[in-house]
Length: 313
Image (cartoon, rainbow, N blue to C red; front, side, top):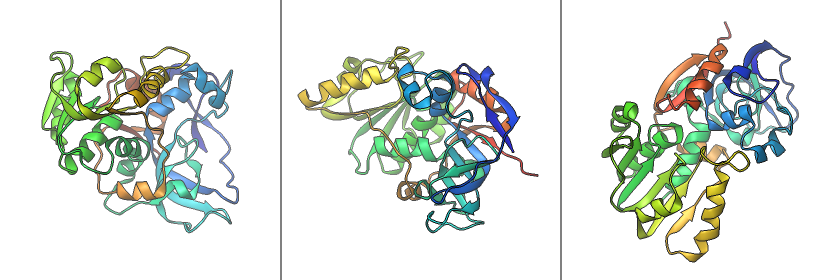
């Protein structure tokens, strides 16, 4: 089968399209014929091997798993004997392993049936980014102002969609080229961070840009407001965004503001709550153009989500 592979860590030029053996499902696995796969920061970390502490999982010297990708949408090709209620022919979406390929494995608890109103491309854009945004936004409305920093990206655009849907008054922060898109998905106010400072007080701040200090963010919160962090690509090579998260966890017990940096796992029950969300998809590339998609992601040039499509014809 065709798959994107890498032999070493590095930038997007380490990725290439190759012929590899298709995966063999175990008794608890579902084999999915991939029609579309999501592009996200998790794949960037796996590609670059950064932060360095992550190589404990990725592989210390070279990628333990040569094909990147977590999110997918496609059709069930085979089901292991202990893989639950999915059956061959079901259209599904969710998270698996090595999804930038014609076929990929996933566990049934991380897959949901794709509703007919979502295309494969839309469904593949949802899993990791939308589940992360949902966890950061939370279930109950905060009843006031919400600030979303990085609103033009994958997680940020889903955060805008989810917060506006529940009635928050949302201010999105993004770069100049993404202002119109963020406004189009429902933000009440959009701040171009290259031209305007951040001001005001907010009940909830979601920061997925990762380049502002905790002091600066807390100054924008109400006394009992909530700050949620994700990402943090501007951290050091060893810990990356974990540096800021570790400082946040150390500070959280001593302040009245609620501070969090959640670890998010894709689950079927959460995926099923997100099927009413129409993702902001900025770019769709064929599988062979994965290096281009990753280079543009790293440069911050993608608005919303990028998706790879797989042609089985």
